Amino acid sequence: MTAPTAPPTPRPEILAAFEAAKGFMPVDEGLALYAAAGEAAALGLPLVEIGSYCGRSTLLLAEAARAAGVMAVTVDHHRGSEEQQPGWEYHDPEVVDPVVGRMDTLPAFRRTLHAAGLEDRVIALVGRSPQIAALWQAPAGLVFIDGGHTDEHATADYEGWAPRVAEGGLLVIHDVFPDPADGGQAPYRIYRRALESGAFTEVSVHRSLRVLRRTGAKI
Ligand SMILES: C[S@@+](CC[C@H](N)C(=O)[O-])C[C@H]1O[C@@H](n2cnc3c(N)ncnc32)[C@H](O)[C@@H]1O
Image 1 (cartoon, rainbow, N blue to C red):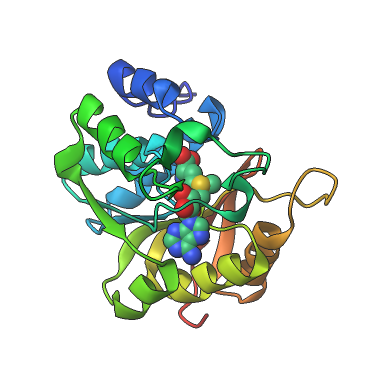
Image 2: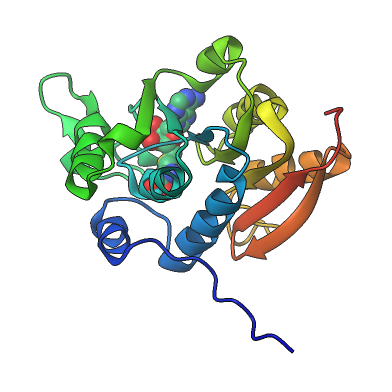
């Protein structure tokens, strides 16, 4: 019997940068995302993220992309989601632009990638996810959905980006909470929709992170 192989881990300095970056993803979910990204990167296609925020999860996609010689692409308008606005639970006053008076996470995002030496591995697209999705035609090895968590935004992210996942590639969704007592239901609803479409098959579950493989052509 062969010993089970240990899951891949990022370089220690990248893990340290992940832990130091602003963001919401716990380390164990990050490692699961990194493992999925490493597997998907073997397809030789870009790894796409919806919801860059300050670059915490982007670092892990970039690190997996680096190892495989592909690019990470990340999409965000950098004005924050509903729950990150002033007065809401996840607001961080440090990411408000004092001149404009609105959130701007792009400077922190750039600092995160620069400090980790991964700037050259990432294409950052600044804009609204549905508008970018309407222009983006290239297939992706992985699409990671972690953008707006309202039904409107999560549905648009699913409809705009899930069709871009190449056959055999991975769709990863964050903040999936089957029990409404644990969190908002929009990511859970698109997760259910992906499975019910018949185009995706569940690969793994890590707390609120769901990894699905595209196994069918029609979404
Ligand atoms: C939960 S945060 C992403 C966290 C990040 N993935 C991490 O783990 O570090 C969600 C991000 O999605 C962005 N966002 C929300 N709705 C968006 C939309 N319609 N288009 C582009 N970005 C959006 C917000 O600006 C915010 O930075």
